[in-house]
Image (cartoon, rainbow, N blue to C red; front, side, top):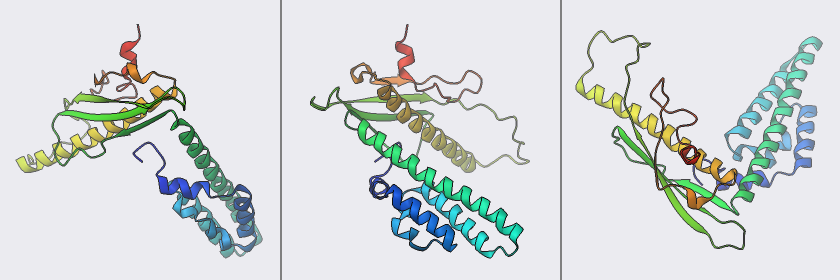
Amino acid sequence: MGEIYVPRDQRIAITKIDDSSLSRLIEQAILDERLGDLHTLHLADCGSYIATQLHYFERALTRHREAKTSRKRDETESSLRRAAYDLSSAVRAMKSRVEIEQKEEQFFYVESELNLGLHYSKNLTTRVTYRWRQTIDDEWKSGHITFAHNVEPRPDYMTPRPKRKPSAAKQKQELENMLHEIWEDLMRSALYSVRSYFRDGGDGSKIPETFKVTVDPHSGGLNNYSTQFWRSQQP
């Protein structure tokens, strides 16, 4: 589903989770000091955020189960309760995110080319396509915007100079790697900017077809405002 949306398979897994069942099974796991039937909710299929909190909760269960002294068990129980809260919060947060995305997709959807290729030039571009409508009864309209970024590498004085000058092949590879990282930053920033524009009630018909990003005056690179194309439309 793209970079900015919860993948469809994770959405399905998240929406299947019943809040009351989650609370009951977490509490049962604490009492039994093992996951038990909590695995039936398939939390590990809900994306890295929930899966990570599940891992922390399971690790806290193990530490609590292996604690021997009363003092140690008091400490591990406190940590276990925090891990349980964090797991529940992660599920609530992701369920809320899915609900928001599903509501927004009734009125707009943003996607991008996620793979530019193996080779990059200093003139980077990324194209974001989108569709939008004012009401659910309207016909969908579609459009696209291409973000352009002319990379001008600046010397990094914080990195020690190598004793030997890198070979031409290594210099080329290092440049490729740097440009790839910059392109990924450009792509993500462009996606989030277009989504933010629509979230704030922006009119899709006013999005330009091309936009040359603005660079940070100090670093010469991208910052939080670089892809905010609507700033150039403001008086």
